[in-house]
Length: 186
Image (cartoon, rainbow, N blue to C red; front, side, top):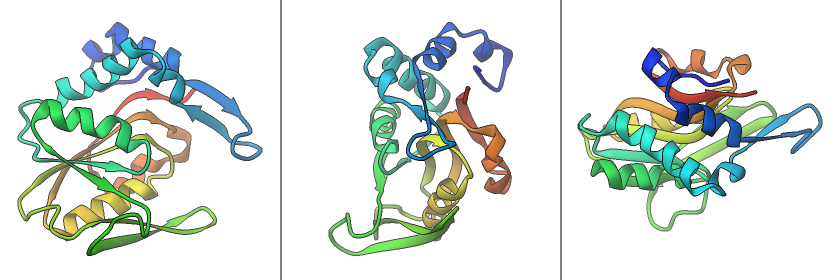
């Protein structure tokens, strides 16, 4: 189902094209999960461009200095958005993937914990940050990303995801931080 925050976006034909391009894979990676596969979106250059363009149109001129992409699919959408709006890109990585000194943020998953890291000094106090990922499910990863950036002195302006899984209520865990999505899971 296509989503947006205003009637203009809901009527944007690019949204329906993006929604239609996402393949749903049942029982992957385990039984009961309906995996939202964006690789099919990436195979269509026009749809991939439309996805990036919708984000760029939203954030251009919003004085965002940092686009932080969450490993791994946030690395796909984050860099082209950052380049187009004139911001730096910061990869938020899983543990032990970045050389040099890092700061980290642990977070709880359904069955255990995980961690995000970024380089010390990547964010400066007063930076205005956008957090980008492919989807929001339970919200734990986005919360960890926001906490990490805010601990380093950035102001997180918004989180942006291609897909939302609304039944998992991840939006509610963002403590009122704005979340911009293009489509809801189907």
